[in-house]
Length: 294
Image (cartoon, rainbow, N blue to C red):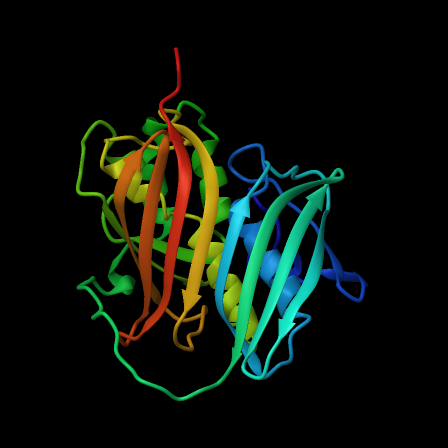
């Protein structure tokens, strides 16, 4: 288990990149549940790098990214930012993440000055009060018998120490063998307050967004997931649109579904709402989802 007295501080340190040159940054890595760098970490760090080259009055409104190679958790990652465009209202940045001389991740991000305009949104779906749901530390030990590796529960809890993530219904590994509606909801917030920096909150939400988005693909087929060992896979691409201001240290509802799986790939799409019902973020991700051979 993590011996750090403040896991959130560790995560903030992970996202606080070292600037090497004007548009070159270096980030550290840490081990994930699988032997590669967690995709949400790379996406969040790349967005940090892009945001460090943008004026403070321009907030991130979208990102589009591709996971190219598995990241090595034992090596630093170098992020190179290209200043593609600086317009009157919009700024565009491209970021390439490199390890061992090869690109492992590519991100394009767009930033915009604040602007008033037309307003409408999809309504927030029904969901229980997050305070009534079990924490990861309370929920995960119930499913210890689903994992062949007895250390998985501790590693899952450790991976969520900085973020309070609560499932509305049983996670995929809780109902292995039972096909369910391809839809999943979780509430999340950081385990502690964050500074009043909009980019930090956007990057933190980006980090969390990769944790559970493909769960709905697994639910449709009664699969338990990577930790159970009945599927193998990885994220292929990830896109986000940031619609309205939010705080990642306040409860956010992550409403996720999978409209399709085919060709060894599964698609997840989701909306993230603030507790008072404002649509804050839309997320779409496709990943490799394969049944192990043999």
